[in-house]
Amino acid sequence: MHGFGVWDFVALIGFVAAWLGYHVAVERGPHAERSLNARMNVRRRRWLEQAMLRDNRIIDTQVMNGLQNGTAFFASTSLIAVGGAVTLLGATDQIMQVRSDFPLAGITTRLSWEIKVVGLVVIFAYAFFKFAWSYRLFNYSAILLGALPAASPDQSPEARRALEECLSMNVAAGRHFNRGQRAFFFVLAYLGWFISPLALGLFTVGVMVVMWNRQFGRSADDALATGSALS
Image 1 (cartoon, rainbow, N blue to C red):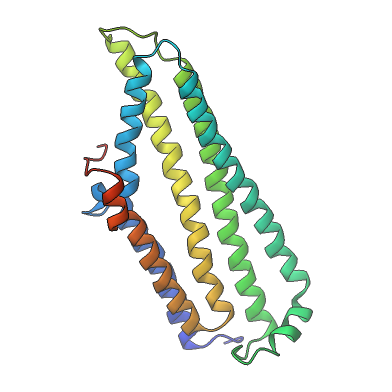
Image 2: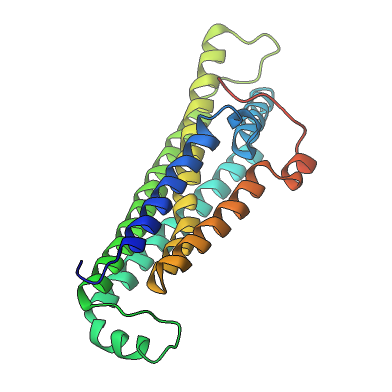
């Protein structure tokens, strides 16, 4: 249908299922508390609890600035990627001509190529919105960090509440950042569709293996002792 075969739809469904399945496994699945993201949330709490004990919080603002700058970099990168993907739509004829010279390139139509490029734009746009929202949440988190009460050996209920607000905002910012970065990883798998449905399936499996190892592999276990995630 318009340049798409049965295997194209099978590979695309598998790609979407892998993305959603990984999202559930990392954020809501039975092993979510063992993920690197969840264990880093525990360290976020530890960091802010230590910040509560410091009168001078320059180091904490520097950490927050680092988080914001990293998020801003990815947001601008994803926006540039959106522009680059849109540019591909205006150069379809030239790209189709170049693509026909590759021996591994399957037969495709102009419409199918443009639909694939639109899908690429959608993924990069999704990543941009996630990074942009994460950046704003980190801004809010910086404000809440500045609003933390002065250091005191006996923390009042108001101080604990301020700590929880700052922590929750910081965790939410990190969660959206992780989702945007996840889109960047999966776009590498999506690029396989421009070659063939088989390439899309193989690239998806490869990206899943790499990402799963990053979240639950031995390297993460060696870096962090197992901790319980935030409820």
